[in-house]
Amino acid sequence: MEFSIKVRGPEKTRQACVVVGVFESNRLSTAAEAVDRASQGYLSRILKRGDLRDKAGATLLLHGVPGVAAERVLLVAMGKQDGLGERAYRDALRAALRVLSEIGVGQATLHLTELEVKGRDAAWNAEQAVMAALAEAYRFDRMKSEPAKDLPKLKTLTLAVAGRAQVKSAEAAAARGRAIARGMHLAQDLGNLPGNVCTPTYLAEQAKKLAKEHGLKAQVLERKDMEALGMGSLLSVAKGSDEPPKLIVLHYNGGVRKAQPVALVGKGITFDAGGISLKPPGDMDEMKYDMSGAASVLGTLQAVAELKLPLNVVGVIPACENLPSGRANKPGDIVKSLSGQTIEVLNTDAEGRLILCDALTYAERFQPAAVVDIATLTGACVIALGHATSGLLANDDGLADELLAAGQASGDRAWRLPLFEEYHDQLKSNFADMANIGGRPAGTITAAAFLSKFTEKYPWAHLDIAGTAWRSGKEKGSTGRPVPLLVHFLAGRAGQRRDGVKDAPTAGSQLVGT
Image (cartoon, rainbow, N blue to C red; front, side):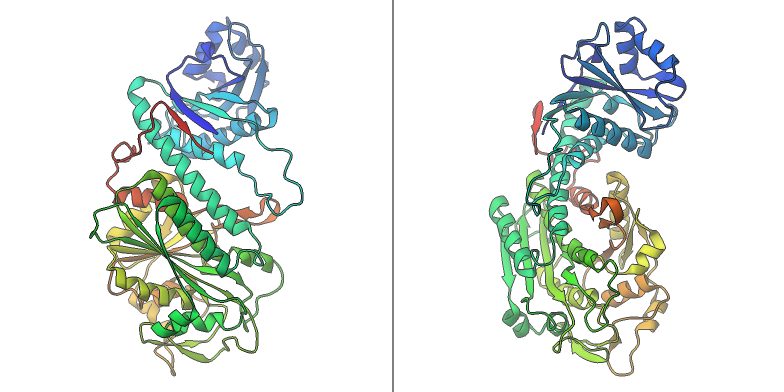
């Protein structure tokens, strides 16, 4: 799909469709007013009939509007004009793009990007529009014998801005939105693949492919390498499966050669049956998504490489399966981590932290400026925050604030939970340095408290994405989160202004993406 940024009157646009907004009580947006004038009040007469509902996201498609060059005009209800909010704007975008997909137009101009969204600017509007367009175009049908027949036909989408002063920042933001969406698509593809395809070996192969395509450096540690290092905690989880474990390391070197990197550590359990502490069978198929943290690291690195962000990033992905067998961890087993600390495994289904702790210790060798781990770690986070917000815990307030701000900027929000010393008491063990679980109370916090014992040498934050990484039910599938949050976080670290102008790729007058 191609994107371009234009200052253009909607009534003069010779395309298959122009999209304009209508506020509550039939108040016309600036673009809609221009169409209404050109058509000598045609829109006003149509709206007075009540054919367009006031609810944000409602649509009305008009054909052959007099005085207008476009073949169709799509009216989109925006809700209240005073204080147009982010959610209403996104709802309107999704509704408009859904209609454009359904009617099969090849070209369209979107004038919703001209509207004033509370607390946002034209650059943010453009980024969200590009992400929404590519999200609507995303399909996962590679495992079907026949590809989907309802593929969107929209090939060119023009984003209108109110003035020429906004073009440059909107172009840069659109380029960022395209890179984020493509990174999300990579994460979604990996997450949606079944566990018999997306194995640790497959993840390693995809990491190498990504490195080759985008000039990254890739290294894959095998079981014997991890044994030599002493990664007893990670390897204990992998014992129950015939699939060999992998520790995947990717380097993106876009900054000064000796500058400290930011490390992203992604949980890569490609299928989680719970081990001996077997999960209930209902919805166990969704445990293929337990590698969503790993997928988000790969998607983020792809976006960072496409944007050529001027910083260094290291991705570390511990990957294995968690299955029951005669070799698997047993409740009560004690394992020794790479850090030298010993862990009593009270629940084999709390395996994510067992692989992450060794990966977090391994990350020390890169002398990172900061480390962020991303993991579908606890069902408790879903109970606490639902499916709208990722959980955030950190040992560094500044790093936590950066991530929260990145979540706000991207719309991929997180919420910080406490990490007080008192929670560590729940992890005490009579037989080892610590237990791998702390009981039902504060499950998300005690999981992070466990990880914090391996992160004392650098600023660290933990994103629990158990509630946000995928959807269940009719719309089952990977969401690609938190790629938007992570890309905005790294863009901030790279010194980009909020509108994305500084250090952004040169977009020209046209942005081409898929």
